[in-house]
Length: 577
Image 1: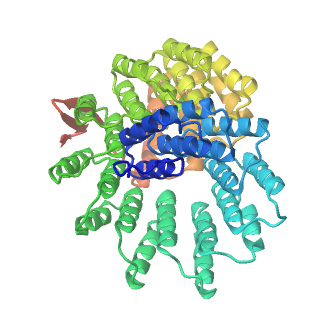
Image 2: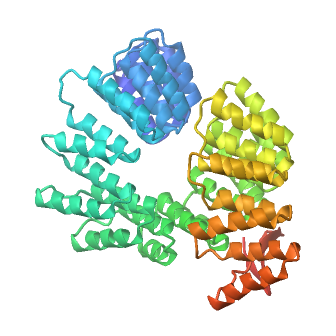
Image 3: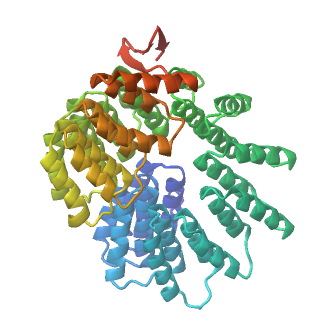
């Protein structure tokens, strides 16, 4: 077009930028950006919005935000594009901040913007905030009745927030349910583990002559993986085969992923092997399946096959493998992956960088983790959390607390996971006063509601310090019902400080919650043995013998020369890298 001397205007540039975004060609997009600046087209709102979208889609959110901030005249499309960009990039806090600013600037959202905002609150999964955005939608809709698209988005939001009653009310009010609204409602029932109701609604949809599309089936398979419902997943697989659905790569990916999440590795591998054409996503799905089953050798073996098959791994592949190295404590394998990423020139976005920081920190190389953290231009809350959790695991409680102060100074808001990491750090380092202060700051300073994990950390902190009575009082004052983790922390502390009476209280509660968990019987027997209460030891062992309890053997693992060696009592197993 340019060779022919045709004029390139503000309508042509956005079309080219959209093409760059679809195929993730960041470099070419930057060249088009340069062309727009040279030709004085960058001041046009239409072009600027297209640039923001291109940078967002290509994962360059810093560039997108810079353009957004420099725009002299932002329209509603600019705001909704920036919100959607942050949302798709997983930066929910940043997306919420842009939304608040948009509200403060009295920018009236369009229907497209409202759908983007509702989708954002779907991922936030806070029902109270969801009600607030619902009210915002009602206020900004021109007609009193909600359109099908926005109503469907709200149904999805309420379903994912666990409020099926509100979702069902909105669904029933729709004059004409599309296949999308049926899909969202059925998916909601599956996600909330109301499987029978979901199946009933699926049958009702077909009776209403609304037939499921490939997207419907894909959505339901994904939800089966989310809740781990293998039986329904198999039924959907059979439904696909019976009803002549095209067995696309997307369908195969979803099924492999579902089988992986349901720990049905054989079915996942059979499906994978049966596909003639394999893209990077299906390789990632089967590698992830092995990772979830803790088969580190099979996952890396498949990664080697992937390279031999000339399928280029992407960031998702590397994040999955790094997570597996983190779990196995395989530092050398993790370092090898890091070198591979650098040699292959893979784009290291914030998610991959966080996975690397997490791997180094949890595998014992805290200095390596800090070096990567320091090099990062953009640090989200997940990266800060990974660094603090790493310090905590290795008893560096004071360093974790210093990091927390630095994080707040940087303007990054802590979340629930931040405080779990901090409380664990205080517990492992014996910082009781500091731990109490952190818990108080979370509750009273930031207004966060403690979850069961936070109470478990506090009981562990107090228990390790020998404050067993205080730990027990905290359990009794909890607004939530204590679970195995909470009582287990008290039981472990009772063993550590040789307090059989407190151990008996904890063990009794544990057996009420989970009568089949006999590992705690063994721990209680050990507590009695330390206290020289041999009659009680004999009593516990007799009960275990009568009901034929077989204790699961413990194991430990160590990495030597690229091999993870798993040691079990009476033998050894090698996990090959």
